[in-house]
Length: 45
Image 1 (cartoon, rainbow, N blue to C red):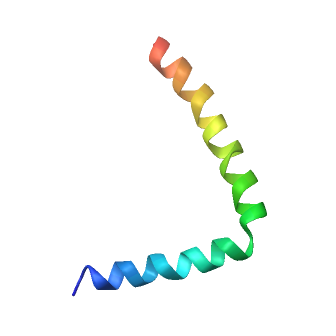
Image 2 (cartoon, one colour; image 1 turned 90 degrees about the vertical axis):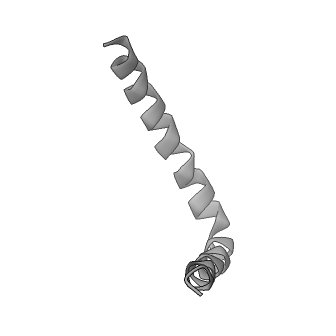
Image 3 (cartoon, rainbow, N blue to C red; image 1 turned 30 degrees about the horizontal axis):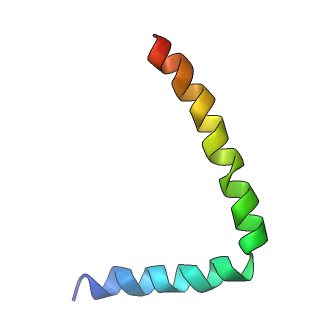
């Protein structure tokens, strides 16, 4: 039953993302891009 609870929450997030796929897509790209440069210097240490 516990597995069903989280599954329902994820299903609700999908419809929400589909409503604003253009806004969520562009925002998701810049986020990972910023994390990449931050990890580069950390590896040099």
